[in-house]
Length: 251
Length: 251
Image (cartoon, rainbow over all chains, first blue to last red):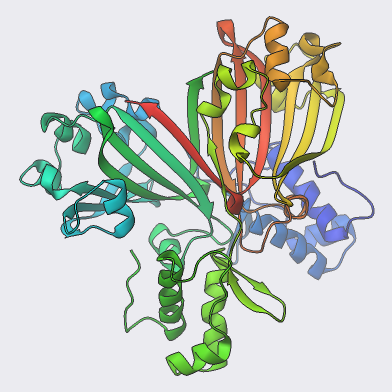
């Protein structure tokens, strides 16, 4: 929709032409953009104008400045998260983790794992249809890909359902939580994912090591067993620069 | 995950407590937050500290300042976009628009409609599997809900498929483009939606009248007819503060 236009401020024209060069692949991921002096000479403008133009691209999340080295096209290759296939029963039913469906052959680590029994937050108790005062098993963890934290996740499961099972252990075993729920007679058969996006809180930006000008994507998934029984709520916070979400479905 | 902590800077503690009050509903959509003087007195801090705290909430997109009137909890009620149901054949097959599935009883307008025949952008020609040099029918429009622009959409369809049909008119008729494709023997049977999020470009922010500190959600949908034949690519840009996306599916 944006079209270069002589009536636009010069810094926006420069930003437009750099953006076009990035989107066309002339500057690929990890490439260094021309320096300020080159851009000043090339466009016949003052340093301030060049800095404004570079600021536009940084705010859009297309580039990142590295101190003393210049401005680079962002190089992290986003994960393709196939929303439907990754949760198919063939995945966790065969002992694979859901997360392993996303990462293909790349290096990943799950860290900051904590498991606790807590009072159910009001919104969670409501979704899980818990009797007043019932507690939940809360599983928190962070996913790190190629050294970059990309996702924070917190799952809530009714204590009345999972007490004494491996769901309450740090290592839930092959196939993870969903395989254990199946063994408990509550196999997830239906999922609903809600997606939102906003700027990160300072805490989220720190935990995910998020670059300036980058939003987070929030996914709230509810897993249902037969009879439309809610068995898990999973609240996820994703670095938006690290993910492409994909959903495929029939008309 | 954030927990109030005496070691945190005071402005962040104040932001945490205000955020909690908003999330709990103590301050609902459209409500005015306490004024600077009240917050200064209540927390025993300087005006600068209060302003920093309010800046945190604004950056997170939770509040908006209205000149001379104070700071308010954002009041626009987001649209719930049910990704799968809205594209079911019962929707467009019965003459309803897809968009009408999202808006329920609220006031909406589709404006800035343009239809043109253009060279296919490279990425589009690739997805639509077009022979070199084939053109596309490009349909652009903007969706405005309760007076607020919420979505920009640009659809691309092969000219070889839609030339001479109502798809090339501003008004595509009952059931819209998909109903017309069905009449042309190319009924969409399968969809894939890709979702990304980033900060808006200046143009997008202007066209969508986006508040500061608010990202956009990008949805790129490809519609496929029988035989996995791609018949439309629709690139959408959504004001993230105006939308919750929902996808429901089976394990």
